[in-house]
Image (cartoon, rainbow, N blue to C red; front, side, top):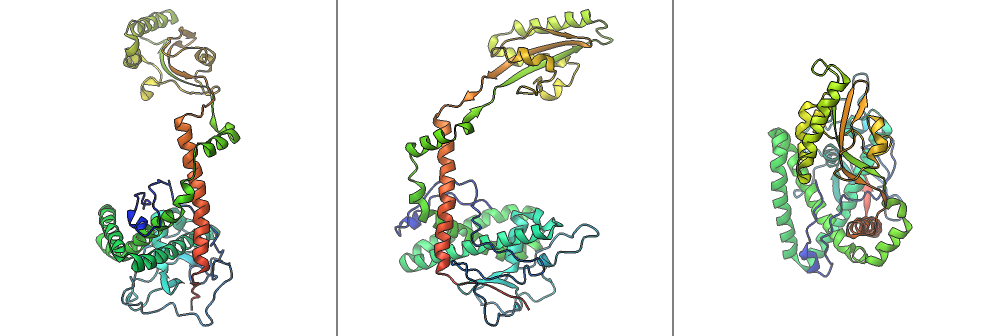
Length: 406
């Protein structure tokens, strides 16, 4: 599920700010992470709170509960079978499909009294990191589960805070946000239905809807709150980063070139015959309009006796030490764009080659492209930092409890 990048004016109506910045992926803070043993996960874990002091119920609620009427009860999720000889990991076992789901739901955590179900965590893993469920390493399975649970808890905290503010300050804005969620849900489920059986889809749909609503509203709320910090990046900050990281903006000398090999063969039984035919090919390319020589060289590749046809006449290798055949390297790195190289004779035939473009390498200037790259990198760094700070602040005022199983 991609993160929404649209600017939500609904938040700005509350004076919370808004942003249209496109971050490539949601940060994975980790300040809420807790390591748990595989035998405990996902049925037992440690409590977490903003100040890192655990909150554990004196008497934990049983994991078999009747959920409130307005609470989604997720369906079961199939966990891939482990490889032969590897025992099924106890920390990620499938919830029994024989259990009446309306009467029994496995709760993993509580965020201000709202349940986070095991099925939500497992579905998130299936969708975002399916490889984790096929791991044979118990440590990796546990870490993947913890990371996913942490992410869900963080977004749930943000989601609840956003809903509380909108319900109080602008309920119509909340309605519009939920309408946007419904449209996105319909859009994404159209694609999911193409690859998921209908019965499986019906089981996961309520959980997926809840996840999407939390994801959409929670992430956009966080972005709206940290936008002011992210938006402070100007040319001065970009130039400072560039000057301090010049090594990141170095180009290595490289070439893009074309190649045809005319071999000594029954058609051309001697090296002289191969060279004569190679000259005919070379002259055909040289006589073409300079703007069309690249296309003409590719067309002449029908005569190639090597493997250039599979690459549309492109030569092998772009940097020093990569060029094949190695005998061409020195000449190639001395040629100009569009230049045809002299024939190279070897015992088995003749090489014909042409330079498409040679990049001399060196320091890349602080041009518009580089400035954009740096600005995006700094924005992501600031967003991740502010994300952690903001979630930590919210969590210090929330009650997060990890359920101990029975």
